[in-house]
Amino acid sequence: MQSTIKPLLRPMFQSIAAALLLTASVHAAAADKITIMVGGIEKQIYLPAKLAEQLGYLKETGLDIELLSEPAGVNAETEMLSGAAQGVVGFYDHTIDLQARGKLVQSVVQFSEAPGEVILVSKTAKNIQSPADFKGKTLGVTGLGSSTNFLTQYLAAKAGVKNSEFTTLPVGAGSTFIAAMAQGKIDAGMTTEPTISRLTSSGAASILVDLRSVKSTEAALGGAYPAACLYMPTAWVNSHKEQVQKIVTAFVKTLRYIKTHSAKEIADKMPADYYASNKQMYIDALDGSKQMFTADGVMPENGPATVLKVLNGFDKAVQGKSINLTNTYTTEFVKAVK
Image (cartoon, rainbow, N blue to C red):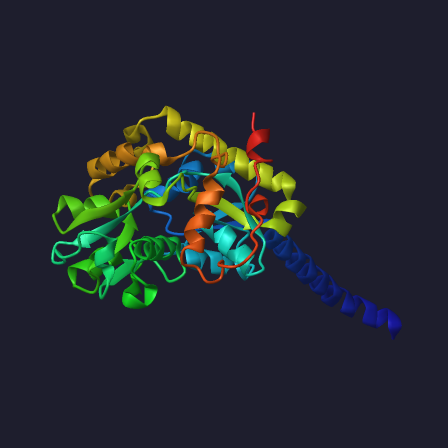
C-alpha cells in the first residue's frame, strides 16, 4: 500500500513545492522593489525624479526602482508612512513636521534650494494686492498638510492674517488647479510650473508672491528654503545604505546634467505629455526656474533653520517642540558621489 501511495502523492508534493517556491520568489521580488512616491511627477520642481529615469540613471543602479505619482506631497508622505513606498520626492519641510510628530525621516539628496512655487491671483480677484488681503478669501493648495499649504499659511501669518480668517481648499495641480480658478472656487492659490505659465500666459491669473528663485525666496522667507528632495525613513536608510547610495548617485548625476544642459535639451528628454501641448512654454518656464536646483544635492547652509523658522510661524505640531535639525537630513551619500 505504501509503495502505491508514494507515486500518487509525489506529483502533489511537487506541485506544492513549486507553488511555495513561486510564492517565495514573488515575495523576494516585492521586497527587492524600491518604490519612490513623487508629489506630482509632472511638476517641474520634481523634474530630477523623472529625468533620472529618462536618462537611464535609475536603471544603471541595478535596482528595481519604481516611480509613482500622487497629486500632493502629503499624499506621497502618507504612502511612505504606510510602508507602500520606501521614499518620497517631496519638500524637505515634511522631515521637520514629521519629527515633531515623532516620526524620523531624512532628506538624503537635496534637489532644490527654493520652492519653485508662486501664489497666483485670479483675474477676478483684483482686491488681493498682498497676503494681507487673504482675509475672507479661499486659497488653493495641492493638499491639506502639503508644502503649498505650509507656505501659504506662513505668508498669511507673516502678513497678520490668522489661519481661521481664510479658507484653504485642496485642488491639486495642473488641470485641476486651473479648473478650480476658472470656476471661481478659489480666489488665489499656490502652484508650480508648468501650471504657472499656463495661467499667466492666458491672462487668467497674475503672480502675487514668487518663490521660483533663491533671491526672491530669500526676500519672502528670510533665507534659502531647501525644498524638493528625496526623503526616506531614517531606519530604512540606516539598514539599506548600499541601495541609498546608488539612488543618491543617480540623482546627483541628474542634477549635474541639469546644470550643464539647456532647458531645451532637458525638455527633449521629458515625456511629451508633460508639456501640456505647449513645449516652448515648458522650455521657457524651465529656463527661468532651473537655477533653483542644486548642483550637487548638498543641503544649503542655514537652509534647515529657515524652514524651521517658517514652520514655527504657524505649525502647531512644530511650535514648542525641540527639533534636532541634524536628524532631518544627511550629506553622507551626496558627498560620497565621485
